[in-house]
Length: 65
Image 1 (cartoon, rainbow, N blue to C red):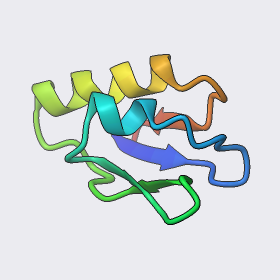
Image 2: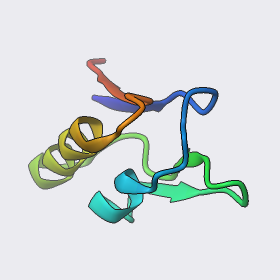
Image 3: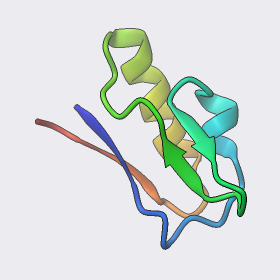
Image 4: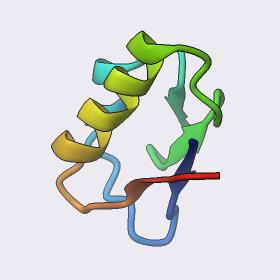
């Protein structure tokens, strides 16, 4: 599983960072940055799925590898 963030659609709400600050950050403009693209365990996968569900612009997704 890999976390994908579409920066061009991000509105900078920061919900991903609040949900999982170890996987997400924001640049100086508030746009999402993925800092841990591959969840390493079930807990991290659950947090990534939560971030996907709370993103108001639907800019975060998960892909199976």
